[in-house]
Every structure is written in C-alpha cells, then in structure tokens.
Length: 236
Image 1 (cartoon, rainbow, N blue to C red):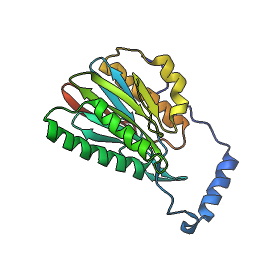
Image 2 (cartoon, rainbow, N blue to C red):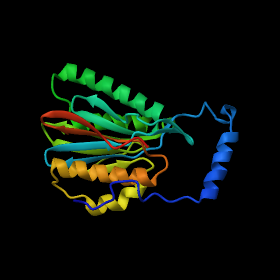
Image 3 (cartoon, rainbow, N blue to C red):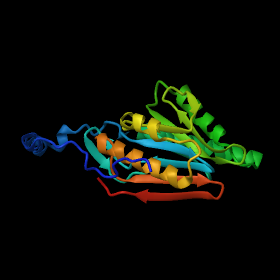
Image 4 (cartoon, rainbow, N blue to C red):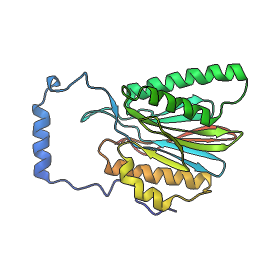
C-alpha cells in the first residue's frame, strides 16, 4: 500500500579496497582494544502507531556496544501493564530500570484502585522518572497501549521528561532516516493490517539506512481483545 522497498537491496555498495582495509584492521584488533566498561546502548529504531481500534508497536532487535553488536535478537518492547507497553531507546540499563520502576508503581496502583490502568497514567510515570533524573539517565521511550476510556494511544516521552501524545511516534538513531517516509505515508484511521504494514516498511527502511539498527522487526498489536506479538524478517 505504501510503496517502499521491503528488502535491503538499497544498501550502499562499498568499495572492495575499503572493505579489505577494514577487515585487516578488525583482525589486528584484540579484546584489550574494547572498552568493556562502556554502557550497552540501544542504537535503535522504534515506533508506535495508532489505528482504528488499537495500536501497533514496533522495534528492531539490534543492541550495540559502540561498534560491537552485543545482541542481534534483543527485545526492546517491554510490558508495563496488561495492555500497556513501552519501546526503549538509548542506554539499555537506564530504560530497563525506568520500565521496572513503572511496572512496580502501576501494579501498586491497580491493587489500590481495582481498576484498569490508563495509558496516560503509565506515560506520566515514565515522563516523571525521566524528568526527575534527567541529569543521570540517557534514553527516550514511547508508551503505547489501549484502555477503555480513550482506546489506543501513543505517547512520546523524550529524554528530558517531556510527554506528548501523537497519532504515531518514532525514536532512536534510525528515526531520522524515516521521518519523511512516515510523514508522507501515515494516514489517520488506518486498519490494523495497514498499520502493521506501515510499521514493517518504516522499520525496514530504518534498518537498511542506520548502521546501529538491524536484526528483525518485533511488533506488538494491542486492542480491546488483548495483546498479540509478531516477529518478522531475518537476522542481519
């Protein structure tokens, strides 16, 4: 529907001599040349899209430590509640810690109120933790989910703690490469199938253009019926 390449055939073709020089440099490097104390960073591509009835969350699966790919099949889509998920980019340790705290707070909140947690409440908690620790945390997060009051919602929580609801949101190092594609191809009121196709193609483009993004595309579809996880693409 959205007319974008679905493979990696548009990658830049490198000069053979440059490739040989890079290979020689890599072979001469030893484990002592790596900074093992450097934080693991999710150089990444994440996004979430509202559709008519719910949301589609998506992320690539590559985790990198500098130029070293630490994990090709990591999961950057984390559950905060039964129908609320967050997509993480930046420092893996920082965003995992924020997710753990928010999940704990929401569990306590649900036990006290005996009601379904709203997506906005979860996003506000994420935003609050990012803001109050903005001098120590390095990461941005997207919170998306479904509740009975407002249906499917997507909130962008930036590194400094600002929170903004958007019909779709992107994040991570790969997001700059797909900004124009998303603006041109997003349509309000898309069906679930159209939203999933939109996420697949956008993340495919990001992974093809951004050296810090790659692996496979993980998706989580959230609506009134519950949560459905899907996984597509090869491991690159």
